[in-house]
Image 1 (tube, one colour):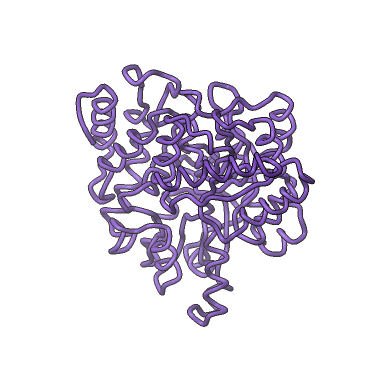
Image 2 (spheres, rainbow, N blue to C red):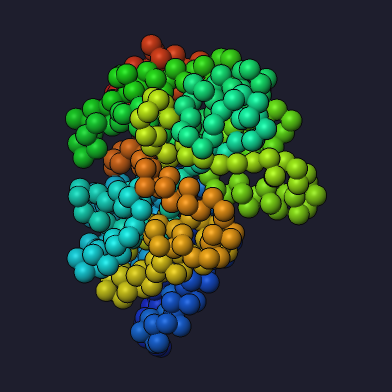
Length: 419
């Protein structure tokens, strides 16, 4: 309550004593969003000022705070940095101010496909794509060569499983009971040609899941095999993105699916003397693995979009500020400074981006293929239900896990069960 009151007072004072103050609720980063806020304030030339208020680090806590405050019609929320899975939950009850058509037309131009889909609800752009995240397949070139894999061509999960087995190596995957497990499940189902939810716009009682399908069974088979065969390492049931990176950098590292942050992390580790340069020199990158040979993979999609609060007294100014924030040049600068990939395709051509991230073109291609996690107002129930029934990975069964997940999620949505 103290945070809410403070934010409200700041906005009011700004309006009385000078230009309107727009409060931008941001996710924690390395300071890049605060810098962009200062730049856009300067470029506004007195039309508005942007003040940053940092949300909790945990994405679910960000969702909870924003949803509760918007449900209370909080007028202090002008701009929000939104995790894409939570966008439908805020858009459906009208908590996001409609995007003006001219703004939508301008900001949609040249946006990578995955980010554009993730910013849309009911066929309307409801947020502005800012930065877009995706997972690549990182590999140790020595292991790939030893396994006889041509990494210039697409590879499948089955090829990686075979390579790890024959090379006595570990696969870096995220098996912990958390959002990262949902990310893995969804990417596998989508890559196999299916969808976790078949009708994302349906009401809770009518939601139909697509897990009990060939795509869902293939996803379960891959996760279950990696888990039961010990290919994800002994810590797989608690492995998040950082744990996967540690495993990948170790003596038995081979292949890893993970976000681009790992590149900066590995370079920093070399500079600090915590990682040998030889390990960094042995690392390559490629598109996310295919589930079905010859069928294009659908890598995970994440990132941050900019939403405008429906109850802001300065919606028009907020959209002016939002357009400034998502300017492709600022996205490129933000990528270099904070390591968060742009949603604008043109930003990847920036020379500083290309120098700092030699895998920039692969990231861009991955984002063109990327599939969002299930877009539904009931995402929290769907994600938690998957985590409850597809964990630990060693217990995932293609003949049972898809059905268990379906039964639990449907029961929760109909009010017949609790998570």
